[in-house]
Amino acid sequence: KRYSRITGTGSYLPPRRVTNQDLANELAQRGIETSDAWIVERTGIHARHFADPQVTSSDLALEASRRALEAAGCQAQDLDLIIFATSTPDMVFPSAACILQNKLGANGCPAFDVQAVCSGFVYALTVADAMIRAGSARRALVVGAEVFSRILDFNDRTTCVLFGDGAGAVVLEASDTPGILASDLHADGKYVDILCVPGTVSGGRVLGDPLLKMDGQAVFKLAVGVLEKAARAALDKAGLQDVDIDWLIPHQANIRIMQGTAKKLKLPLEKLVVTVDQHGNTSAASIPLALDHAVRSGQVRPGQHVMLEGVGGGFTWGAVLLKM
Ligand code: ACO
Image (cartoon, rainbow, N blue to C red; front, side, top):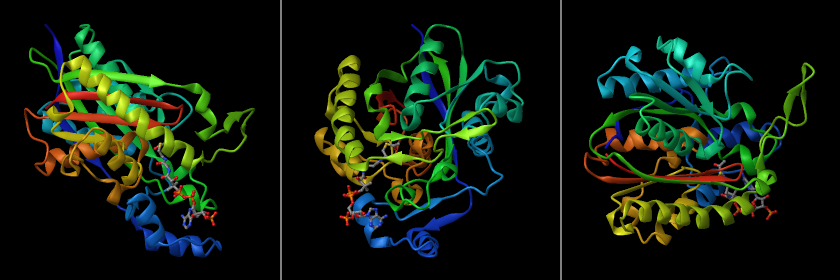
């Protein structure tokens, strides 16, 4: 039987680190009041990274991908699939995946974007796993990268303090032994309005508002419930139980949502990988960033069971259970 396994991880953060106090000072110049204390208490975020204006998602992805390829011990030319999860692509088209492919020098292999906002990485990983198991790929690069700073409304303190920029990547290879054990994906389009960037490009102009809108409380209420269900569905499919999870790596949106999910899964908080404090919410990049951080810091070790969980605009959500 053919399976897929993660053989390397990598991540990259743009160098400009902005603390809550830095952001509060910037917002104060616009007459908007916020504080480190408010942001930490409601979200667990202390700092985020913002890319410089000329830097794109594919630039961040390139650095993360090089690190993942190095960790996997392979070259870009060895890739036969690239899937790029992002909601902030470099252009309307071609895909960020095609732009990244050319920057890497992996020209020729199939490359496409997946758009599922903050669930993008679990969606992309599930697609790559299915293609590898079906025999249509052997070695895939799966990337999540975002420059959410481009779509933030810095006049809206309820959203602009939550997000950051960054990239994470994994190399996923065909294997005789199971790596990805199960996944469970969902979407419900009736919730489009609670988290969206409603604008688009039309007739040479931006039509509608191109900045992020969110009903934070509605998102919060939905998130914990759907994350528990998706994790339990993935465990069921793999024939495992919550006690078998060594590490929970949820989308890093808000420490309260993450801890609420861990509690519902009866996991001690020591099993929760947390990077939201230093990265903020980096949307599709948050899970591979946190995974890479956990691997490189020696938290996640070979043979352990890891539950990845995404939730975001759409509404979309899902879980991927894997063995490292
Ligand atoms: N600084 C200071 N005060 C603020 C700020 C801020 N940055 N933002 C809001 N406030 C004020 C509000 O104006 C409100 O004041 P009022 O009572 O005078 O009207 C007060 O704080 C409370 O506002 P709430 O919106 O009720 O605060 P809440 O406790 O719900 O926290 C938050 C807001 C952090 C957004 C929370 O709802 C949340 O975390 N929701 C989930 C959001 C999320 O994680 N989204 C991303 C997930 S999906 C994805 O990643 C795309």
